Amino acid sequence: MTLFTANGLLLYGETQNLLQRIDKPLRQYVAIAYLDWLYTQEEGHATKLLPGGISWLNDVKGLYHRRSPGGTCLRALRLQSSAPGNIPDYINAELNESKGCGGIMRVAPMGLMNWHDIRALDYEDAQLTAITHGHSLGYMPSAVLVHIINRLVFPGEEAQSLKSIIVEARDTVSELFKGDLFLTKLCSIINRAIELAENSTESDLENIHKLGEGWVAEETLGISLYCALRYQNVFLLE
Image (cartoon, one colour):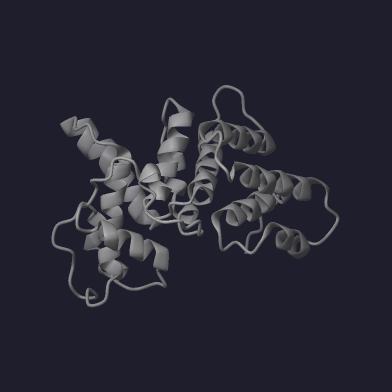
């Protein structure tokens, strides 16, 4: 789904909006790209390429293979398949109450978009995640991750430390979703990841267990932040 996310972003940025000047939000291009992905995961399509669709990835025969797709993604996209790309606001649509990790694990390409407004980037990324994961703890962690990636790729005139970028991402997303009932929980796990990475003398396994198992998005984010902070200057080459 990461590849199809990138495909939707490229179609939005380079094909439709730039060449044809069609005023359509990015989230709707990505939503249609996800339906193309859904086709590759459905039974009976192993030898039948998708007729139509927007993703050139559908020409890659090797992608027509089920690789343990997430049930939440499959169900959410099947519900949308009758009206592809027609939902204007996925966050407010509240398609389900899932906060699984299937949203945050696919959105990294969004962090490579060079937008002038990082708050708008964060919010649009939350919309991309809400295509399949409607709980705020599904899409808010995703926005934090993309904010961090974007600051690392486009540091601006003054480079920031990884910790300061994480804190900025936490605070920006907190402002975007001010008043959300689950915002405190998200901030708490981010803060705990920072504290464990900087000060804990216990093993990585023990620290990661304190952050969770990674099945839900906020735990996935917390574990990834802990690992990145703890070993930001360590590269293992095998």
